[in-house]
Image 1 (tube, rainbow, N blue to C red):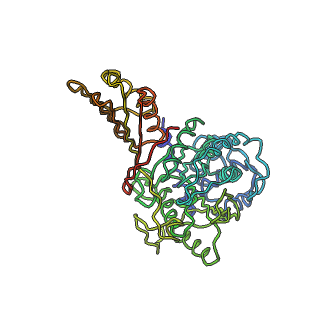
Image 2 (cartoon, rainbow, N blue to C red; image 1 turned 135 degrees about the vertical axis):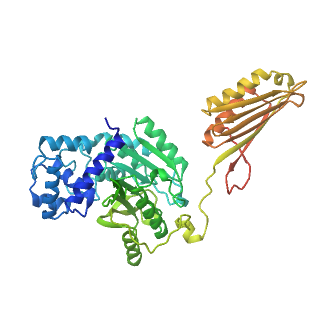
Image 3 (cartoon, rainbow, N blue to C red; image 1 turned 60 degrees about the horizontal axis):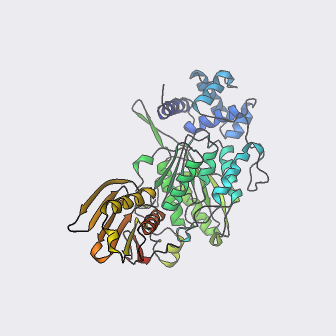
Length: 480
């Protein structure tokens, strides 16, 4: 029995050959759209199927003939039980009807009862990390998150699909994941706060095949996500430079080719859902030319679709563009892998993007008048290790040493760096050194626990943010 990935690959090969034999220029996605339409609207005649898919009737007839030959459907004009079972099993389609029968526009008047479970996402959205405006972040409101999820459902872009979100400070990926219809969801973001929140929320919601990846899209795309996905969803920085970078990355991660019997076939028609703010006419022209130049066509545009909280720079709204891939263009935009400025603040003021630390370095000093309390090295070690474990820091190894006549040192190698403690009983003094490439809050947990257990007469704690552009300025820690 095939595992999912192998089976999906075999189905892709079958549908690619159907498209090739029927001379369907829309390729595998065109065949899928025909099967999706026949599945949802079993009584439609050729003319109506042609209208819904945008595929000419002669070509549509040829595709249906090839589907019969491939043993997928029973007759050219209907799926039959055999076809319905094949589609359900191999394309993982769920809705045997139009899940949103009304024409979809930018207004969500009422959430259908069938999708009332999506309301669960509201409490998560209310606790999103605050927007980092220097990264052009601004939160979409709750109705927008629901609308975009329902839009993807109506388009058939969640059922059985592999979706990638290029940035997701709106947390639409959680809403999409809540449908439990996608085969895989991956979120790529530069902001660890977002990724941590998404990962924890996905765990609480019991979402399967939900992955997060920390990556700066200005750097070369990891090979593990290249040529893999069916749908890309993105809300890029509000600059044309940012848009072009995200379009280039979307084209790289969307599946563009498949090899069958040593022959390479190009795949077209993969989807990209783009949200972008309004611009003056000459800038809108550049925007649309960028879309075309990077190998996409615009199949739909819904004005005023996305509404945001506090995004004054784009008037608190943006448009939704529904794009599809075409053959790889000869781009005139020669954007290097290490691109230039893409954020509004960089473009307008020439400033650098905000410093994002790779870790936090805490130091502390504990002072005691009763020196005898520092002579119990075994107890000191126990308290030290407990502080790390209670903060959910993984200890890989630990080295400790008892000095003569007194004094103690312990150094723990952590999965996210290191921690050390040193005692000078003769001076009534303990020093701490903790460096973690993890959540800031975990460092706070460690030093708060140590202070509570050691009970010093005086204690001081400081931290710095470490990284390539660290200012190396210590800040006092307020334990409250």
